[in-house]
Length: 111
Image (tube, rainbow, N blue to C red):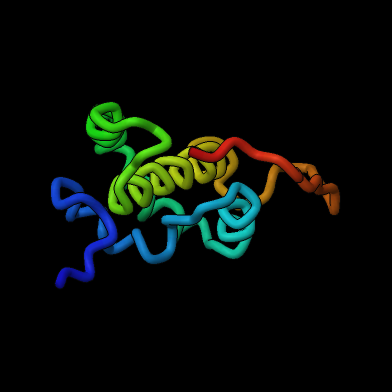
């Protein structure tokens, strides 16, 4: 039995799967806030070049019938989206000049 969380074609992203395959937006945001820029940058550098391949792979499946490895890959893509602006623009996990402001989302789209 394999300990892989992702489809075999994305083996190079596997080191990030345990940390970044997160099912909810709130949990992804919390992980981002608990991360350093270096952590996010390493994840971004590994996943960003593969995001088009990941989307093409996921398009082969019905969204609400994703096998577990593909669902984990989708969650990894969602996490990439969550860290992209902090990595590309802010160079910090928090939104710039947000102070102590925050919001809670009670509903979110899920596959």
